[in-house]
Amino acid sequence: MDKFVSTVENHEIPLHPLDTQAAFLNVPYHFFYPNTNQSDDFMPNDVLRDSFYRALERFPILAGYLRSEGTGKTTVVVDRNDLNMPEYLESTSNVLFSELQDAKFHHSSWPNGLSTTGPITVASANGRIKLMNVHVVRLKDNTGVVIFVSMPHYVVDGTGFFSFVELWGKLCTVERTLDTVLMQQTDELEFVFDRDLISRSLPTERKPLDTETVNVYTGFSPLAEWLAWLSPNTRGNVLSKAKFSSNVVSHTFRVPQQSLESLRKKVCVHVDDLELKVDATHVLAALISKMVAQAHKKCEQNDQSAGMISTLVGWVSRAVFGAETSQSLNLLADVRHGLNIADQGYMGNGLIPHNTQCSLSVLETPTDAETLAAATCIVSKIYSNADGPLVASFIDMLLARPSCFTRPMVYLARHPKSLVITNETGFKLYKADFGDGLPEWVCTIPSFVANFIGFLPSPPNSSDIVVNITLKEPVMKHIVSNEFWRDLATIVY
Image 1 (cartoon, rainbow, N blue to C red):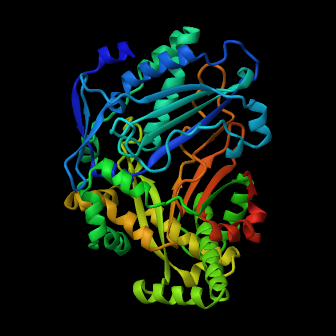
Image 2 (cartoon, one colour; image 1 turned 135 degrees about the horizontal axis):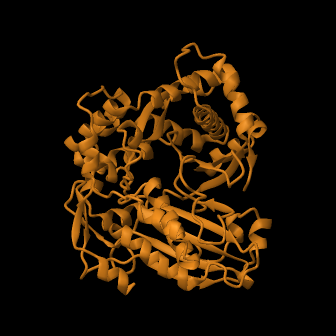
Image 3 (spheres, helix red, strand yellow; image 1 turned 90 degrees about the vertical axis):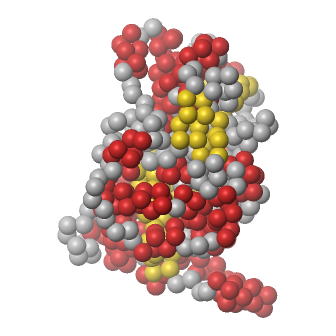
């Protein structure tokens, strides 16, 4: 660690409005490594620790602290004399790796205290928000190692997160093997933290934003303004008590690529726009959108038959907020592609949500290839429209209203049928090799926040898509019993 401190140069990184879009959330993942060869020298703690700080030399932002200027403007300060060092913990466990395998890595089998952060970004015991938390757990009889890593969305998205973990693995391998070729390759990697790269890459052309997105970000909300005015510490404390993860259930499913591609072809038969690019993940997002809408409808029907009190509560809710006739679908897209900077090593938050309102009359219809095509077209059109001019218009809107970053969160909380879907199949979940092979399983924390859907890649040697779904418990019951879904997907846990 001392060597790392000696390399630090004082600097400040004013965060871009894109960094604030999910700033209240962490990016937390677990990496499960088996000691397949029963090696005594398996992922040694001292080398893991030493290479971690060497990786940190390339990511000094993770040792900085947040300085808030209010209403959405935040700066990361890296001060050699006042570093906010990442939390790095090491522990041992009485759990065997084989026990994790037998449980299919279900969280009930995990070592106690494995996850050291939750979904919401909150201050640590010293009163500061850590910009990285790490917990290395060595399993019983050295049968494996589990590494938990968490970083807040203030400083990275999935690209930055997995780039760091992969770099850490490469440096660990170099230290253990003295591989000069790998060392040279690692030295040549470029990581850009300067948020001005986004501004410099914006095209001059602009494209009108869809009405739904504009309404979400510009509609006045006293609660949203208050949340934006709070410091990151106070906001995190408030949101952690809001119980976004209360009464929620997460399930992980596996969708065979072959089955999904077959479904995509059936759906495309009913797509009239022959120029519209329909990806398999678009079909998957549309299917989940329909399933969730159908599940909510069944929950409402069950509430109406449950008795007078439930009926009265529903009537009051509709009288105050109005009856929902659409589902707010938020698809996260990476601006790096639209701005043509995907190859420039940008490590800041590059995700923006594309919001659209999907009519419940479309989503609640029984699912078949034809009705699924109608929902899929909505999704595909959103992604096909996410080019540079649209990204530029979105950023213009954020720059004009720095405090608007809390409005989508408040909007989603008021609309329980809303969904946020992120496609992480292109992220490097299974690329971090510390010298003893790739992880056998990678996953996030057991319960994230409600109405959040994540598409993840499968472990190596498989092209299947892993789908993590987090919903309120009554809604989830109808998802796991949905016949169309059960024919397509297999539940992992």
